[in-house]
Image (cartoon, rainbow, N blue to C red; front, side, top):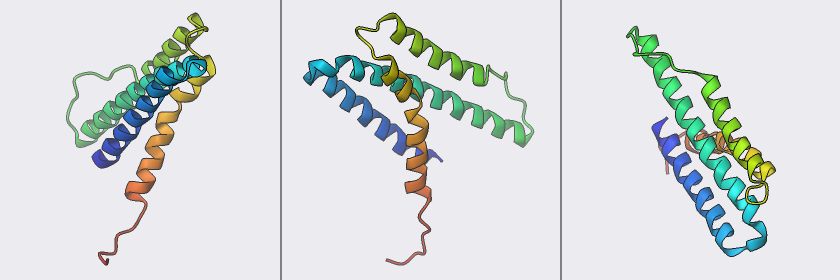
Amino acid sequence: MNEVLKMTRSVVVLLFAISLLIWGIVPDWRAAAAGCMLGIAAGSFNAFLLRRRVDWIGVMAQGDKPRRAGTGMAGRLAMVLLAVMIAYRYPEDISLPATLASCFAVPFVILVCAFFKLGRPRSGKG
């Protein structure tokens, strides 16, 4: 699982860097690139929160008592809402559709990275 998340982190940083490069080079696409950067940041934070939740469930399954439960899905929804509110507040600087699409892009990146990392069976040959 850690290998998938390392690969995902690399892809997300690459997407963020591409968005930053587009923001700096193409003035007409600055709002869309800023929305992508905001959405990628929110989606990455949501992935971090979800990983903490999965680790917490693993601790509970072992029978240990964790410190506290946390907010669960409400925290992840609040992060997306915060990103959307920022994009809504500054429509001339940040594109709302790009922000929404990028918020939900990180889980798909995780899915694709998991497919490439774990999907191929290894027979030990070649």
